[in-house]
Picture: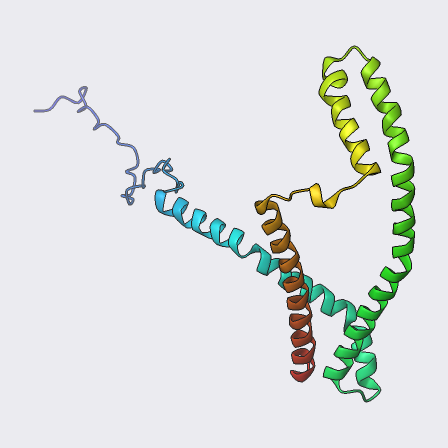
Length: 205
């Protein structure tokens, strides 16, 4: 017989059950490994740099050709519109530019010659005063090798002797190479510009 004064203990109330969810991915730390300069990448960079250094002369010539072609494109187009064949128009512009440069050289060459004569007459006197100032200075370098160098310069200006001047073989070869490279570069610029202007017109650009 169950007594009325003693109720059974209530069952513990459980909180609302959380519905099962998919497992949340844990944050993956960013990898500290970054693509560095591997030996292979370094080798590729060095090869590309070497090739650019070797072909820089060609790249400069191509750039100069495009600039020159852009400059003379308007006169060439004007002659083309007047019925002059385009190759002939380009050649006429070339001839005109060469004639203008030749005339300019002929005009300024007497001025250059006059200035050279003036320098030859006035330079020894100016260098002589500078040599006297260096001899009286307390600087051993100026009073010794400096004034001797000035004396040689004065003697050479007063009495130039080309026969007594010996040019080193390396300097002569370098001079000839520089002159030859300049001539080849100018001819190359003219040829590339001619081809560019001609092909641009032929393609309808």
